[in-house]
Length: 575
Image 1 (tube, one colour):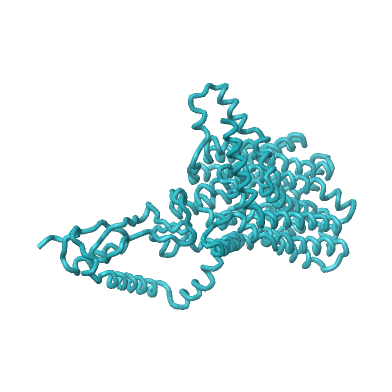
Image 2 (cartoon, helix red, strand yellow):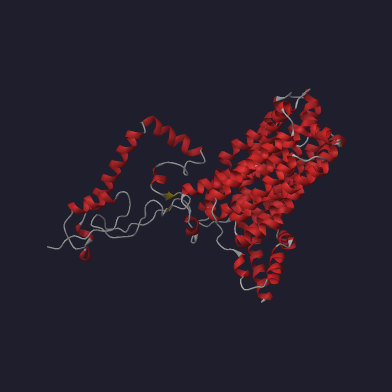
């Protein structure tokens, strides 16, 4: 009688398979006849019974019911940290199996007549296996680190607003010059994309990010010890120039490690730092200025940047799939320099905006950032006199309203974007069209945020509603923006995948140009025409941008295909 052959271990349930194998009819695996065995049902039943008994012992019935109904629906980390699926090593973004924990291999056993095949949760496309290089837990650490780093540059852009009168008094300057320095901060954040974008494509993500974190720390210290306004101004601009790397390269890292269908949710978590930073920074700064000196703001910023530098070195790996530095091999020093300068040519990035789908989305992002900074910048000068507030801390508390809105919206903004995309994938019989996700932002951008701006501006202008009305509408607006940004940011990585880094860089360049305009002109415009009419203009800009996004959702697929064809023709012509 032949000795039965043991198959390789395929999962944590391998002991169950072996048990079923030993109890089944002995036979040589090479002569296996599926019709003679009914073990699969027994193995499945035994496995399910053991799993159910374990879950019942660990989790009481009321907890399992509540968790499945509420927790898994709204908490963004549900499929990222914990749960028996993650414990088994399943990469929930892809439905694949992580190599770090257990490995499933298609084998025949005495227990089943079917091959063991990977199960894919959600939408799966050919080529998505490149996103399974890192385990889910490693991805979480990368995501948290990047979100923390993305918090630094935006918080630096607005935290000093709570100390505006104090800085003006220290350096014997004017409020207009001070706001101009903040506007230039935004401009240098915009220009930074032209340097760090090509560096990220050429030399990868990790080392440009680490260099940016280290220099951000150094220039923050320079801002803290600046003896005069000229030095302060220069240090602020150099700090801004490093900060955008966290945003552009951070989003590129997420594009490297997450599949398209799961990406919006991760971008939403990443944007928590980008959006919450500008709102929470002035509140923290208000506490510092009330009880200490305004220079303490930059010492805190320096300490946070130092932590970010260490975290970048220790946690974030190199994630780039391809690097341009391979094209530099064999070239001399002069040829390498010329090649890199060509890649850094801003005209190459700006030419992308000749494509309507990229232009409309970039303008939409710009309108949102213009709205954000034109709302946050003049709070100390607009709301303090309106409500008779005296201290920087009083004004800083108003920043909490949009800050809590940004924070709360993070928990479902990206999830809603992915939900809309999956719904349209089902309508199109499994075909994914990137433009479909843009539909998730239309109501928020075209209706909710403009309505909030009108209520905010005219309530302050006409002195109605007291403090609660502006606080409520600022909170709602913050929530609505976190629905728009993950949708638009994720689309930038999908609209032109082969040039996604350039698209993201160009988008950030344009949005921070609008942020600079908002910071520079909001206070003079409010003094000239009033906060009501200025808010009306901002609302009109948002509605016009929403119409552009709506047009992209309808016709963007054709524009995108036309852009791809034009690129092919340009390549053929150059050859």
